[in-house]
Length: 475
Image (spheres, rainbow, N blue to C red):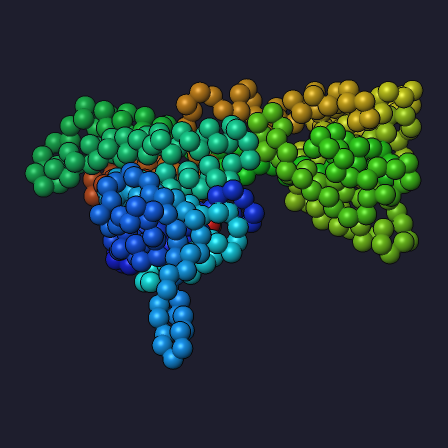
């Protein structure tokens, strides 16, 4: 069911992060945006924002009226709050397809908050999370997949993630979905006509052609859906845990991967007691790296809690880097940890290759038969590049992102395509088994509805709430 949303009111919000900066922006959108902005803006040239042309910039001051007393009389006087520049955009050529005023203030918390408070005082309403982008969708400027791309651009952790999101924002995914949906509509139309004007005989040639078209369309949907794991991983990243017993060089490798001294490194075993996390870029793949306490058998209460926390993180990790000290033989702690890793993606990382080697990694083959192996020196940096390449290859075959490739980067899109593919499979089976045309049409309409939901042709309150609640208030 479609829901109509009230967009008659004018919304305002701070659209830049709060803190000390050169510039901060307060954004105002709605039919009364310029009128409300005029109430607090004093132009240097005394001109009005209400009468200003689109895409113009105005220099002046944010002001408020305050009461002043002179004897027993009170008067109203303008007080300057901030020196600003206001950018004007008029409907429909704006981000929301409404009138917009963007007030560029000094970037401190106080001037931004005072400006916003004045706008709210004069009739604006505080925007909800993502409401500016939501209005862009409701007013037809962008569709739902493009709105989600904006969220992904803002939250991209690598250049490749941003490139993929920009491709979606430019409408590549929308066009593909609408093309597939159009193909299905072309298949449905003659089927419905056949119900209205039934023939005595089934046209075998038309049926075979229809099955071929449905199978081709189902393949297009599957090919698109098959990109989802890569796309979601590229946007959200992977969780990587550095696991190993004490003093094998986990913290040294952590510092080498994040490229600064993030973790304290000492020769004393058990220096790391808590989980230390950082998000890094591994050849274009975002990864959250977690350095953990060494896995040992201990009676110390603090160390025991550290080990338990490390084991909990291990359960949630997408990849475990099993760090071993190549300058010593494997011990029982190494073997016990290897047993805990046997059901996970693992790279065995033999560290300290700059020292004489004593380790026999072959012993681990029975426990971790499919684990990759990389030799490094976290201290010297040797082999770390090979380790990064190996991490990427464990999740991607070939390039992470090909030129202008469409990647599904949303679980919502993946689920919609999966439902679409299921409906198409049922429709194909019905056609092959000479099922009722009404049943085939029903399945095809289910498939087209899944695609319509993806791009937001039928907007429900639940879908909008789920998507835009993740946005910041000023976007």
